[in-house]
Image 1 (cartoon, rainbow, N blue to C red):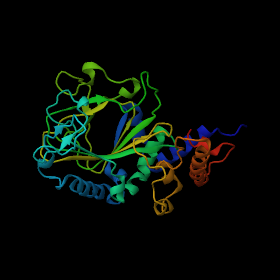
Image 2: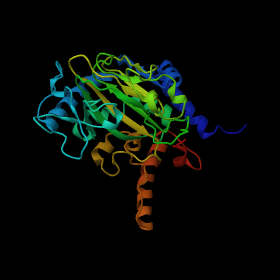
Image 3: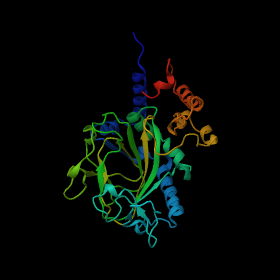
Image 4: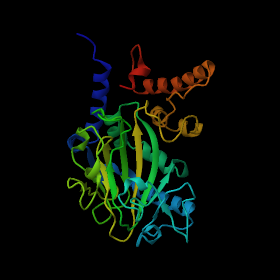
Length: 339
């Protein structure tokens, strides 16, 4: 009898992880709808999300000069739309939002304050990226070689503008049905219609294309299939890279806060560069998989043959350690991690 293929071995491994964590119904929903909400009792170990919320409030205070008003949302209400490369804080203490192309109107920002590159600013994010629930879902979608492309915090107060539907896939149509990227979002405050939740078109990941024209619009005269998600604080919201999603405006006082982990297959160029930047003491206190997730097993572009050899050797050290950690064997153990 022929030995099991690497694909079968990796599929069995991830399914064992999914079963051990009780994630089967959420994987089924993910397959059917293109997104799923994993509740706090499963996704929020040791008060992780509560600690993340405090961390991002601290970051916002450091970056913006004032602590976010969680009760009224006044610090983030009706942020302007950034249309230039000027500083984000403009005018009389007014923050500027981003991505004006993804709202049908330039009344205010459709998503509020997007704080990028937050990983470095609090140790809690080191813990959050290694949450077994997040890793199991990201692995199911993007394989054992999945890496963190970017981590950011989206903090939205009351606003008028909806966020138009789009996918996170970098591929042209027809997109592959296999997910090359996925989004794993920690829901740090309750998500619902009034709170300005993310909206999804169920099953749209099966269409393998971007929405166009009116089907990309959220709200009046737009896509009637777009559904605002409901998720309690502490949940993990996961979606396939091809799923159509946007957001409704926030009508309630207060803030909608979430931390996104954009996870990609290792051949997709990441948005943030972690290669060679993780301190050795951080690598030493974590598993070999942490190094892979944080891009240490990824080979950078070379500028000479010698430089390429050095970079391949450095990455191979981390991928070999990971292969050993999970018991991966065979003639091509490193390559097989990316199945």
